[in-house]
Image (cartoon, rainbow, N blue to C red; front, side, top):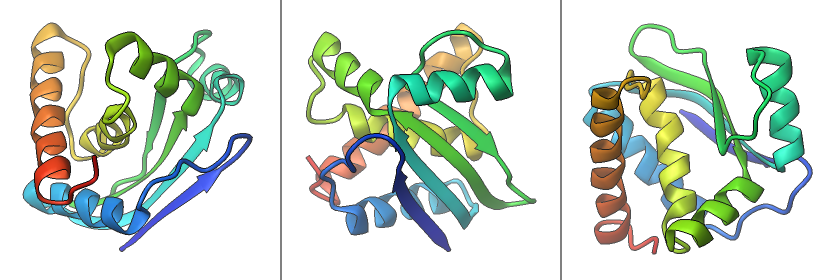
Length: 143
């Protein structure tokens, strides 16, 4: 297991990363998967826009881009998170306490096999995010 956090052109968020790692690991285990190597890269809108353009041919801002490198049931990947987008979304949706955690776990949920292309998939993803956030709040006291 190797969950690591990096920052590119923004400051590292002030999170208790030890708790975040335990929480992510628990979520992965709940999906009957094995924690592999997961890299979180916190960055700016512009940095993530460039990733989006270069690797996905998308020309728009987003809060997260997840690159899956899972093998079998071992969950691995690179998860890029725009702190700019997370901050703006937290203000817009009044989720300042939890938005960063929602985005962090959203990437993991993609890696364990959830998607969010259709309305049904979005509903399933949102429920999984909400359940994970409840765990983060109640079991890990992260917000």
